[in-house]
Length: 319
Ligand SMILES: O=P(O)(O)OC[C@@]1(O)O[C@H](CO)[C@@H](O)[C@@H]1O
Image (spheres, protein in one colour):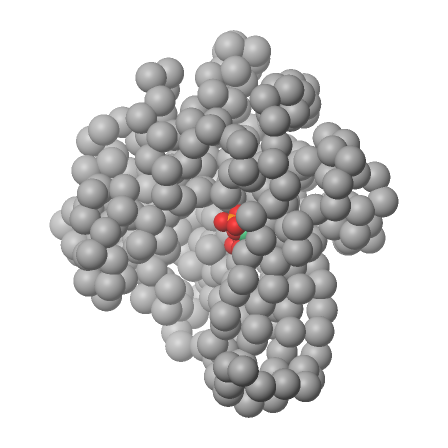
């Protein structure tokens, strides 16, 4: 079983417009849908829809549309009541696949609530194989929260502590890796996050177009003690670096409808293959297949395993 934590979940409202986005005008949308969201929530949705047991842990009140959406989609969740609605994030999707995203900050989440969420997580994480800590942190939560949570889970569960994956950005990612008590087993940065993490934020575009440089950069983190780095590169696929080697995988060209959540689905694809005992290369291939399938679906819809096309992914070993 895989447990995900989304400290700052969202209701993802996707508005599809019939032409190019034009600022300062009234635009009549052709379609508007809302899905439960936030990175850990998306990962749990993508795993569940493919038959992998997953639980999404998140703050949110019973009856909130996000929790109702999860229940309707048969995704297991454990929620911590907060007394306020989950934030709404808006995506404007243009016909050529360009998306503009506006993310709300979320409500302040105080120290007592943080401790309660950590306790709930430890309870849910008993016996699971992976714990995924994902997404931004709401206001009031210190940037080392994921390091604090990882330590609490390791102390609370001892030898039964699960493997840990982290998918976040900025200070939250930096401070997770600066934690004193053990690094995550897996991180999934995109090129911007990776560039920022190694202190060269201006390099992100170069990384996105250069898998070999991405691998060399990700290796710096493996040398610091992270077991595996899965770096997603948008249309250029993804790079996986472990102590054993480095690989790049890319899907045949697709028509992208919405890339929002594609990175989350990549991580879900990786975990799904890992749960099935697959090799690092095959985990990478499934990550790329899942990410591409997600990008070809509208809004933040997650693909089933059957909708993914790993046979259209090419993989090469990097020096
Ligand atoms: O504001 P955060 O937590 O960084 O990101 C939240 C979010 O953009 O991430 C998901 C896509 O990855 C969406 O479901 C959600 O709206």
